[in-house]
Amino acid sequence: MPLSDLLSADRIGLLAEPGDRDTVLDAAARLLADASPTHTSIIADALRQRERLGSTAIGHGVAIPHGRSGAYDDVRAAFLRLGRPVEFAAGDDQPVDLVFAMAVPEHFTQQHLQWLAELAERFADAGFRAALRAAPDTDTLRALLLSRPAAAA
Image 1 (cartoon, rainbow, N blue to C red):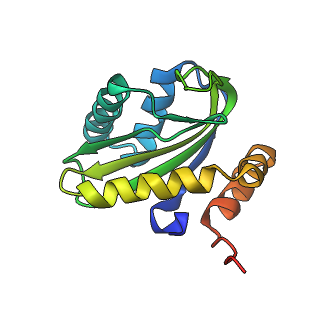
Image 2 (cartoon, one colour):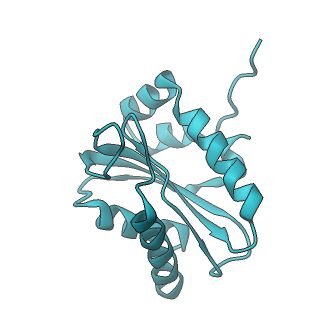
């Protein structure tokens, strides 16, 4: 699955001053909700509720915060590269600087799990993570995230 199936250019950004995990979740919720205050609150609550169940950090400085909500009928994704790593209670004890967040409709149960597995596989690629961290600006991040990965030979 290309990330462009979930992600749009206007939901990719840099967060220079990430603060703490809750600040990052709030920023992700704003992107996911297209800055709608009502939807931002609903999505932020869903992301926090999921985070309370266990960290969504998958290791290597990556987190995939996600939550189910009735805010939208379609899945929404956002990506943030943080200006400095933030503690996310990762299993490998590494703070997080790459955040791929998702707001998923309540009824997308199996599809939600499949997307999470595919995202974890994509972010397991050390070269991909390095390219995201080295990107000098948002345009470069967008190009990296929205381009289709090369097919395996």
